[in-house]
Length: 266
Image (cartoon, rainbow, N blue to C red; front, top):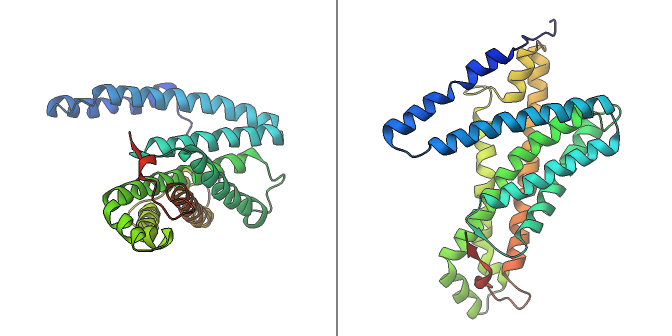
């Protein structure tokens, strides 16, 4: 199968972008008040993607490992910050917890993919593979981390009386906080499990769709998508577990006390 794709002009992209007007008309007709957010969202989408396109074009041309790693570190930091900003309840140190969790999980999974699954890729820092791969894992893992953090705060807040009662009766911090931790991890992992249940039947994922449009053999596109789905699932699970457990340790001290005052609602 010949690898080819249809090159889009600026005018054709503009036609597609004009579809956002439909969203604006719906907001106006139903008085949803989303017009400003839609405009800002559309503007940020265009500006961010255009800038990323220029940066990636330069990175692909330079092919230096330290530049590739620097770009990946910036992506990781932005993902960690975005994950925290999506949560309703925060605590001191939450940004560090998010950074540690998303960095450890996504970089470990990406390294495994580049050095083991895709070992034919040389050098390992080839930006054509390393940057898009990490980006896909980061995008999904930050959702899991955001959901897990938010659910942990909500669970501990709503179950405060029960948690403190258990602690006063002699329960350890783990015995008192185990159920909120379990619910938080479960919440963070459910979206990727749901995606895995319907992938290929209800929806064709973005990576597979892009490869098919580019003319890649469907069999190879499927193999790549299977690999990506399992990498994403692993990264999401590791990141969610990591951030929830780190949050648990910050909200319960070594004397088995629940530090509820640390929780702050945005």
